[in-house]
Amino acid sequence: PFNLAVKGYFTQSKINFEQNVTTPIPSTVDVDYEANMMGADALIGLDWIVAEPYVGIGFVKSGSELTAVANLDPTYSVFADNTSRSKKTDVTSSRLTAGCEFNLALLKLGLEYNRVFDTNRASLKISFAF
Image 1 (cartoon, helix red, strand yellow):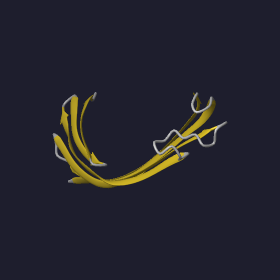
Image 2 (cartoon, rainbow, N blue to C red):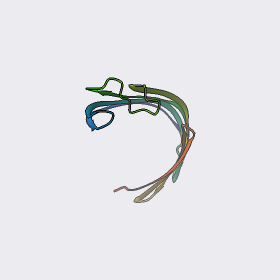
Image 3 (tube, rainbow, N blue to C red):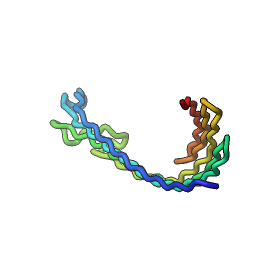
Image 4 (cartoon, helix red, strand yellow):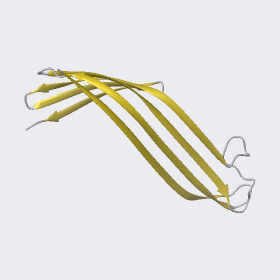
């Protein structure tokens, strides 16, 4: 037998703060950062007695924006181009997953590999079942 799963996710975060700067003139900069990420995966796995291997494919979309505006000097910029008040980025990536969970009496082990945004990640999970 096998298992088939579909999962989706969404997360959003926001942070804002004030930063005092002294050049070109003493001022306070209002800094706002907003980020979001969403995605979906489809996974299929085999349901064996001791091992449960699985593979999955999906997508991830991430976006963020950083805004910084000086209260007293509207020409002030925290960015390298010295003119921008905000920078925005949106990226999309496929997501590949492969792993296996081992059920060893009271001990469960999980190995997983992910590739997303051109980054490889391996993880190990250990748990105890009573």
